[in-house]
Amino acid sequence: MTLKFHNTLTGQTDEFVSQTENKVLLYTCGPTVYDYPHIGNWSAYIYWDILVRILIANNYDVIRVMNVTDVGHLTSDADEGEDKLEKGARREGKTAWEIAAFYTEDFMNGMKRLGLITPQHIAKATDYIPQQLDLVRKLKEKGFTYQIDDGIYFDTSKFPKYADFAHLNLDALKAGARVEFNPEKRNHSDFALWKFTPAGEKRDMEWETPQDLLDKSNHLPSTNYQLPLMGFPGWHLECSAIAMSILGNTLDIHTGGIDLIPVHHTNEIAQSEAATGVRFSNYWLHNNHLKVNGTKISKSLGNGYTLNDLEKKGFSPIDYRMFVLQSNYRSEGNFTFENLQSAKNRLHNWRNIAAIRHQIHDTIQDDSEKNKDDKTISLYATSQAIIETLDNDLDTPAALKIIDDAFSRVIDSNLVNINRQAFIQLLETIDSSLGLQLIDSTPDISDEAKQIILERNQARNQKDWKKSDELRNQLLSMKIIIRDTDKESVWEYQI
Picture 1 (cartoon, one colour):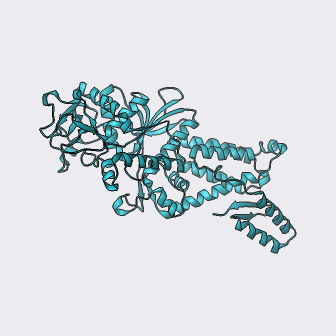
Picture 2 (cartoon, rainbow, N blue to C red; picture 1 turned 135 degrees about the vertical axis):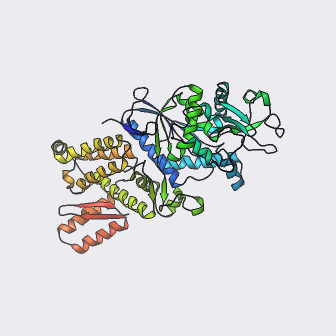
């Protein structure tokens, strides 16, 4: 089946063709590390992890870059307000550098807890200041910049395609401009490339503005500034500079949330393509928002739950991963603890089914015979069906449905009729494509527990129900439950 994605650039689902055979250049907009990420933030990274996994399943070598915004993300899309890192530093009584280091480490730990594949390149904005300044320099040389009192801006009127990506109505934006709109900007849509540190202020994170970037006709923005003129990058600048520095001028895929389309990604395209003259990315994938109880996530409502918040209520990060995969990445999700509990129950049932592999004892003759039966063929076909379904624009809900159906067939089968090799291959496919860690989370039970099960089976055969119940209770104390069928007893983990 052909690998297809819904491409924001074209507005339709396109067949994926990389620039170089068997190689994908992928860029993901990363976190702004000023606070703990909430579950809405994490849902995006879970979806892009599935993207990486399905590209690998299609034999692509994925070269992935994710930025870490540790400077320059202002509190409004209009390039106004305080840098979020500086704001976080004031909130916690630390330096911006300390805030960035702490929350970057927390984010990386969260990625591990969720089972996310780590990108080959995790690039901090503060490590790419020279590259960002070089990009401003290129734009200035090509006539796309101008200088006003608070910084160097990109002139969107000089990039005719500016409104195309997000289908913006620039006249409407101008008419609806808020009171705080900077009157010095030439156009409402113009954005800051480099912001000057205001006179009399000392930022934790600031760098000297190169002389060649300043407007020679007006060497200083105003009499309130002195040389050397300190400054810091605008939020949008880092992604273009980092992506092009590591991956080249044109990416295969760029990912992010739908909230980034009208401003951040539009500005990335403008500054990148103005500087290079070529397309910045061939495919743009965007995930939809996650709401909580039908409401937007916000600190004022106290619904910005973190992974730690979920764990305090008895839910693991992988429980949450299962919850996220139950919705399509382009659909608006709705989080409730009831829905999360349902996802946890589903995952627990899958783990008990995965544990069946410890209870199958094939012989060479059995394998040979089973390879020809319909049940075995169905298990092998299920693995391929999962990949083909995810090839179709990362359709995770449909993939989960396929797994449910296959597992129902496994439960309905006697252990002796299940081909262990085919079953393990199915589990490996689920783990590699969806990252649910079914194999790693389902260890075999102890030899002691197995001996108790044998004794209980003997007691049942002898109709010694009292002893059978006593042995069942022993297993319960070991958090093992028994599911009895007409022909056999299957052990499961107690939730």
